[in-house]
Amino acid sequence: MSGAHPRHQLDELIQAPVRFSIMAALSGIGEAEFAFVRDTVEVSDSTLSKQVAVLEGAGYVRVKKGYVGKRPRTWLSMTPTGRERFADHLATLREIADRAVVTD
Image 1 (cartoon, rainbow, N blue to C red):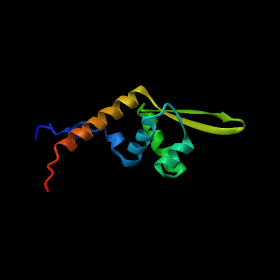
Image 2: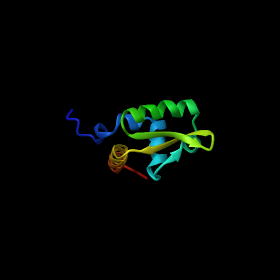
Image 3: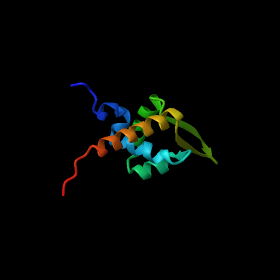
Image 4: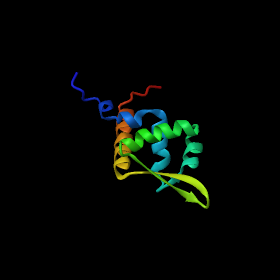
């Protein structure tokens, strides 16, 4: 095996369904509140926190904490590296899909 199949180019961190969904939710926006991403991805606070921590550790997502009035808030955004890796991941998925043999 030569390792030429495009699946070898998939990003292991982004490939996980929840992390992929988080990246997709953030891809079209500059910054989003934690609650918005949680509700969009349909996961618990705990699950989102754990998965965001993985993405933040990889440098794919930026986490910013602050306040709105007296209420603490957390905002999430994709880093330039995260945007590049997500775009590469999507391109690889498209390449794999393009190789599919569809029969009637």
